[in-house]
Length: 107
Image (cartoon, rainbow, N blue to C red; front, side, top):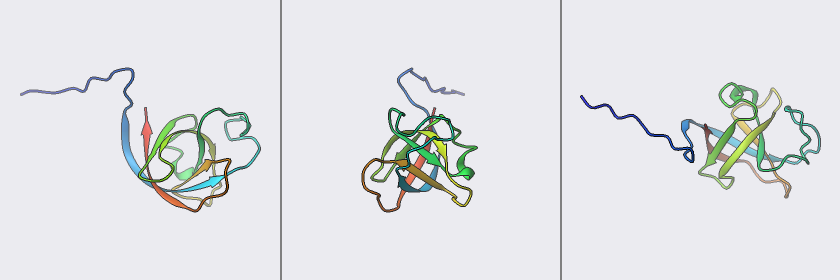
């Protein structure tokens, strides 16, 4: 019996199971759940609905794919209780319509 184990290089990212989420945009100047001000955070970040918080905790990185917002983002904020399976991307441009993306956690 031959057992193959994956080799992980430092430059590789490991992806886990996928979720289909609704993606919205927001542009609020204030503090995030992590305590940082939205205008001071460098890089792309987003807010996540409370039901996804256990799978994608604060400060973790997630990859969005199969949508216009494809890329890697850092989870820095939590949305309100009424949202489920939803992600808000901090976006400085004009508000965009809802989009559906595939979300995976990046290790």
